[in-house]
Image (cartoon, rainbow, N blue to C red):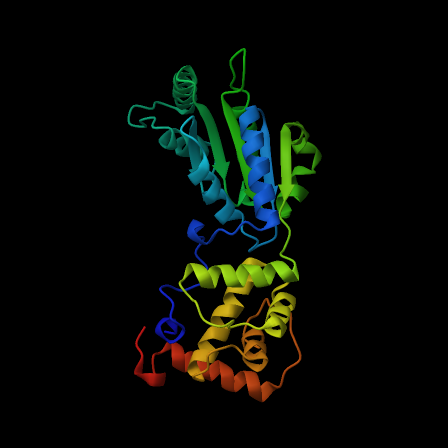
Length: 299
């Protein structure tokens, strides 16, 4: 692709959440600090919400990597579970054998026994759920009941919910008022500001080994920030396409016309003024580059 052309070791704008690329921008640092402080209290639910693509999964993985050995974490990346499936998933994450389970009541007893064992070892148990807005109603209630498990000193489980803004809408319903009252800490991830977008791009390029002159000038960063609305996932998509176009044209930096073409080829990007002929031809160029036709380069 364009790695050798720009002198990079790896793709700088991959969509896969990779903690190697974590950058200490204010919204993510603040969210991480809230989570770390909240988990030290050992009480209730913790909620982090943000628009699609703002970095919730990356934040979740960063938290998992940074928690000390006193924490035992159960991470459920796919929350679309029935209450029975939720209990089974939590049991497996905590190392509970499911082979001899007779029924749901028995499984709940085994989970509680395991939690008490971990508590006796002075461990703090944390249940993290990504994409929590997809949790069915009865599973949310089952999750609340998990937090009823406690000793005389503290709760046995803390729950961290990562979700889209729809999670807030669901929890505002009256049937979830008991769960809502147990949310002790919450944080809402915001999109990046224009200056943060530039720092974000430079950081990811540096992590991948790029050392040359700026590939995205100030005007390109400004356009990229506007088209992406400061959402990291969209920044990655647009920047990657723009680099493909720059490479295909044999250039050392991204032009505004190439970036406009990338925007026109990305459905969720905020449209910018361009010419139909420009982005159609550029899209064909992207496809040719991706197929390894240009310059005889294979992926």
